[in-house]
Length: 322
Image (cartoon, rainbow, N blue to C red):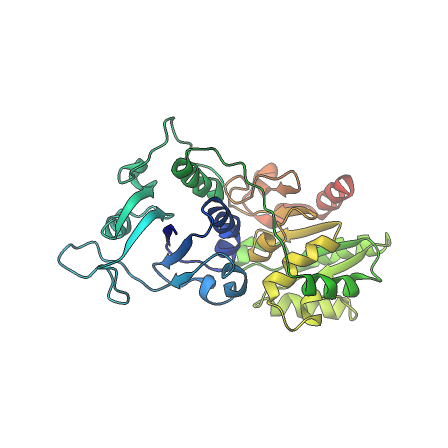
């Protein structure tokens, strides 16, 4: 049984969701392997996404705070002195953390830090730095197995959850998902814009499912004020985690609209079309390669402000896509 250690700075909900296909691919490539996820800080793989990530991970270690100094312990919170791994994959790029990580014994160490300086395996051709983050991770895994990996987000969900959602969506007409929240204010398209889109498609005889993050209290309040009978799938199922409910709901949607947010990653399952609205961040770097995901950037309008994206253009784009 191969022992594999994957190191990261830590994961918030969006990061954790982005990396799930990477975890799944490691698990598939190295059958019967034992994967340890090591986070320098905190990680949702020990909390919010524990239920999903535990399908692939044997162990999660967080707040490790590795030390690069050879005369000190590798970590004061976990004993790595006698540990040995067949493979270590370094997913972050801070030099001192990579040096600290390299103190842990391994047969193969892979890291793109400092243009692959510390890595046992290196790409043969000039490396493109501005890629979607997940592509970089799959490039490292491809080096290890000596094969290019063409991945797709191929999520599966518990049958019980799908059955519950099937009943919930049973009487819904063609349903569009709308996720108006985001963790940062500059990533939020105005809630009134989302409501305008919702009203337009409700008048076209579509149903709307709203998806709200755990901190989107304001958005939910405004939605309920305008649509007292608003449909929130997560509120109707109690025995599964919120992220898994959102992800599985995409099997029952024809389309979804969101900001560049954690919930947008939950909607990026390839089961329904998704339109992501961006602010100043690069759509290329933060969007999976998929024909099912389209993006709109305010740079089209000479701006970094997400609210320079017109409602009319968003509606026209959705109509063309569906």
